[in-house]
Length: 150
Image (tube, rainbow, N blue to C red; front, side, top):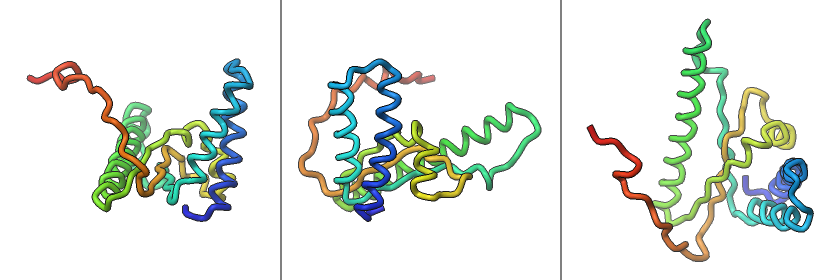
């Protein structure tokens, strides 16, 4: 989405969910408001916002829970893989992208606000545009500490 009015409408609706959740968590108001503002600003200032959704309506259906859950996991992995490819493509074009998982916490709100099909399950959102600056690389754990080589 690129339309500022749509992004602003979505940012407002999602902020209401976010604020409700933060209040339930017992976060004080003076800490909530800056988080809400940052969340809204990020969404509305991004030149392009891409919403990634999972849709199980075309997936196989199984009578047992184990295989049905495996099918759902496979669909989620497919969404994540598609998202990674989109970020790599954006990078190849000289664009920056940020993946946020806020849609997982506001699925119904997003569906209602954007008038999307109920079969779509928002999973993530990308903010894409030209970078103002490159962030400093974070320190990473060694590959040996997170992998098992057999």
